[in-house]
Amino acid sequence: MLKYGLPGAIALAMQSVLPVRAEPVDMLLCLAADVSESVTAGEYDLQKQGHASAIEDPEVVALIQAGAYGRIAVHYVEWADQLQQYAEMD
Image (cartoon, rainbow, N blue to C red):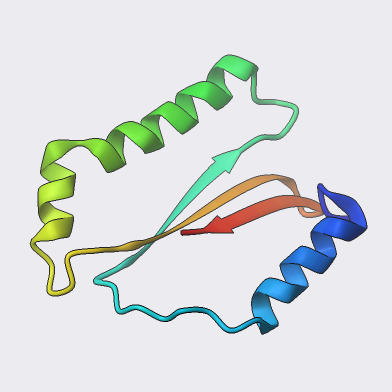
């Protein structure tokens, strides 16, 4: 089952059927993090800090802003195995 059980499954299903405010973006960036038992808390923090640092880097921000729309969409995925996954879109 999903990481958050039945409520998580319902929320995930609703995301796919509810209308979304569509805004054009220059790119969809998918960031993925391994959260399986083989990953230590320090390694998990390193993954998240690395993603955040990359997105906040002034050169990256300048490149994003220089695009036709000046924005990107970010899809963040955490997984442990095929039955334990979490995804968020912003």
